[in-house]
Length: 430
Image (cartoon, rainbow, N blue to C red):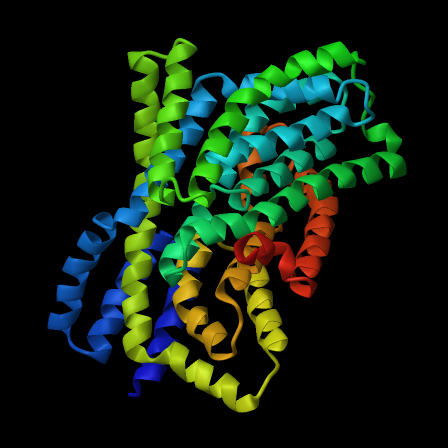
């Protein structure tokens, strides 16, 4: 059997196993080792299976992953998230739908040091949803805003998704972070505008919050200082070459730890934060080991190269190839976790976009944004299920209806990024 056929059958088996609810990381590992053995031999496959975990776990660049996770966990456990929402709520005081806008703003700011969409969604739901319900917000609007706001964590740097994409494609992590800054801020602005439009169309969904004076608004900004300090420390340090992205992750984690200690977090709290960080990091690294194994299989099967050659022979315009790949991501996003999508598909599609001359950094941004859409689209929007777990009294259908306007907003943002690549490349190319 031709190696390309073995590769295609392997990917088919991968999808079948995932439909059967086999853990994604284990699925990639089994298909990668088994497929490699069919193309080469079992001795080589077992040797590869022994070496890949060592390669991943000793890769210096991957050490940034647990550091970014630790930043988010410490921020959540030290009370930073609560102070953040209090500040944004005061700033938006008196606005129609102000609590929902405050929740979106809090998600965007929290994600700037969290890097994880699921962590952002769960943390801010715990803080903001009770307040919105207390003020009589429609549950669909409240949960929809939180589910959408959580997705900002996948784009606003530092982002674990952008970090993983950069490492898998051997791109500069710093360049990926810079490229994600404007699209991430666009998402924050577009979501706030979406709430404003929804309020104009259906004003009964929310009430105006308690009005606050300019003195109160300015005084409340002190709650934003820790987040902006850590964010600027990381981004400016990377941008001006003071330290590498991996070192920046460590610096950010240390700065967040100092804040947590200042706010009274001690041994038991720090131990819980470390345990949570370890648990989340283990899941990510298990998927990375599976993805690396699957990538070796895809490479030796030459499936991605055959697809690239075929597409090249069709002489399709690069934009057509891009739209086909994004359509695939949009469909996969309805059924799969965002990180799993990236680690499974990037080894397959990256040679294709190289062959047709698509800029890999721009492609990474529009890909991550499309993956971000998958976090809130039915039937398996991971952020929606996180919100459901945090608010079991709200129906899934109600959350999905509430998040629909934000999906439309993301589609507009994606269209703009495709039409105007400079929106994502300006900070990289200058």
